Image (cartoon, rainbow, N blue to C red):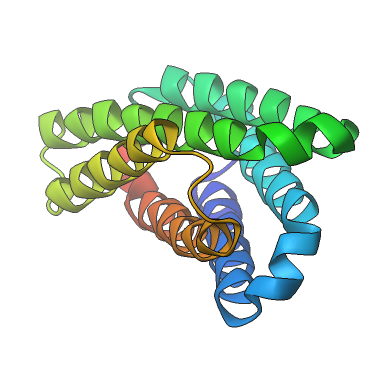
Length: 177
């Protein structure tokens, strides 16, 4: 995979996550009914993109192991969300929280690779990782607060996750060695 294709895939994944987040924010009642599908497909696509970026560029991108680990965990959680409707409805807040927590930690750690390589703006990536991890942790503390609030939280956090992918796509050319 070349630099341009990996950047385009990351940006597309980010845009799709942002769109999914906006759908949740604009229509929380509709989002509640289809939240597991929206979340499952958004997670599946972003996980596949992470795995593809690793597979095609692991020799060229610093810290690419985090792409693979994040991708595998995301794909496994997405398949669980998509294939188990009843349990997903009950466990969705926990699954979503774990995804955000792990993904935020992975992005946070990956940001230090950006710093080590002298990439300007690496602090934004760090901030996004911290925000995602904090949101995942807070969601784990109180997973069943309000089902309507969950739709809004999912929307906002999908937008944040999408921004993280877009930022990763913008900075990924600097990670190639």
